Image: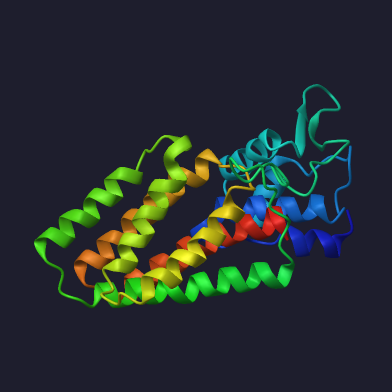
Amino acid sequence: MDASLDETFFRPVRPGNAFEDTVQRLLQTIRLGVVGPTERLPSERELALSMAVSRDTVRDAIKALAAAGYLVSRRGRYGGTFVVEELPPGGTPIGRSGGDDGTVHPLPTPERLDDILSCREILEVGAVRVAAGRTLTSDEREWLWARLRGVSGADPADYRRLDSRLHLALAELAGAPSLLPVLADNRMEVNRLLDDIPLLERNIRHSDVQHEAIVIAVLAGDSDAAAAAMEEHLAGSAALLRGFLA
């Protein structure tokens, strides 16, 4: 691989979303043809050193992309991790049925993807900042904890619904009723995008930790911490979406 490309794609990732950013970087090298079909990736050790992450993070990212149909691992003297000969069509499972009506969701343009994700960041980061600045009742606090408990460790088949419910609960606690329909519309668009990429187990576990940090900051009345935690959480989702869809 060209050294300048190596530095571009395998540079250190952000520590807060190491797994998601590692997946995104590896996807970029594959989708842009930097590492072409049937070609071998650098070793786990080399990737970990270049990207300043643990080998476990690299290994989990490779496993996730292998499960999504992008990579295959081979043992033996000439083994390693290779890009598959025929890549999935744009993402997995891009172009699948979008619902019971049989509709197919087209890939968003890069501009449209940026618009949806930027709008989400503005709405949700702002919402938790305001929510953390309010004095919540005991019922509101218990309700938020219940939403958090509901999504933590949820079955993957029900995860998206419970995740959405927590995010909408956080927005509702901002105390601005007119915000909710706007945020709900945006969340529907985000979910349509999320439905078109693999649901990665490690990302779910990571999201559980980030959700807890957001909720704790809101309950503690720490607006800056709540906003920062939400911003980091959304950045991880955005990295995966851009990796699979952009």
